[in-house]
Length: 221
Image (cartoon, rainbow, N blue to C red):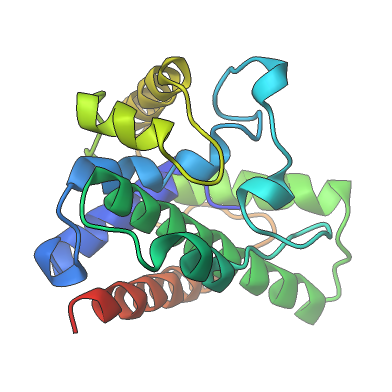
């Protein structure tokens, strides 16, 4: 699945090419944080107590399988529809955008490895993760979420499960560290991918962006 530098790069592209107002986003900070929120309690990105860890299938509205597919439409209908304006609404929009990205990239990964005759498994997963890590480092990202009273309140009110202040702060710190890492280890040009290709990532990125834009524009149509 896309790493946080990829999710952040998608947010920066949305703001650069569309603008927050055109997408119905009022609180950019909450929207940005929402784009990493589903990964907070999965256990890979943020150090959180075991008692608060949750299964990827729950946090991402996903089916099972080696490369699961998040159901972002179900999330939209259950949590976004009917939510009033405010930081919580923008947080939910960001979370929805995260699920769109994961769904598109994962679906394209499944299709691609099948097309070249590669089976899903631990070896394939490691090759895929390496390539996603390389792709993520091709973005000169700069946006960092900030801990604010509005963000803390929105996370506490997150309807699927509360995200406590301690974990909000940890996630903000991790997201900022990732921006620093990208600055220090930025890759110029096409990386030397092992499994996937530059064309794969270009196509997945474009499709994810198009789906997010089309979905968010529903709010301002």
